[in-house]
Length: 352
Image: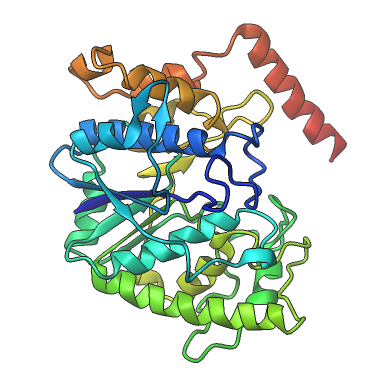
């Protein structure tokens, strides 16, 4: 079983990713360092929880990575992480993508995982581990399930446009325009599957990759001919890899998919204004923390690169230890911050 993540940088300007806009990053000049810190935190937490599993990092970054005087690639390799060079060539939407262009690198990784011998669990680099996900491993290795996450859980409310001002009905209108042989949505309204977790056997990754290739090429041809597929909120199918992969996943049978939402993983927003942290999050094996790249995950990185960190001496699972860096459950927010958060939530509801 492989635990996998990836990092893609813009090779034209190696110190920053100027052509891939990410609304979650405020420091636009330090993308490379921010993401390598995330990769490091991901690997070091996973190695503690999954010491018997293989760890792979796919990257198109061929350069040394020196952060705070530490050679990051050397550090990870010394821990047993296999860093695999993989160019970003076949799934780069280039100028057709306005947001998250480098997220399409994940499609390169999916293709590569289809060529391996062992099953893999592919996760975004801004995830951290608190304990093994044993049930997920069994579903992948023994039951041949595809592990995904229905990120917004909207199947009973297909006309609701929150979030992103994009409903399941809006998604259907565009997906119905994707004319690819033997790829038809098997649901009345398509589910938005988050891209932060994809787990499967190699042969399934291969099948998924082949279908992604067909969908990607069709959408690219449409864009290049002046007919881009644009959702109701103004975003195109190339403004995030999830919009392409979700179409493929919605063409699969329900019984082939395991929805890991709130069972193995959750997309956790831990800010003051947008906060969905719950006490139960301490029981999740994996936390996805997209808003913590520049703060909480940075602090976890700084802690875990210290060889004598108490993290490595813990006798229990590290959820409480790691949680204090990212506000799970709320223990790094002052009373004033909690009040501010509640006021912002109340005001947001008031103006709707």
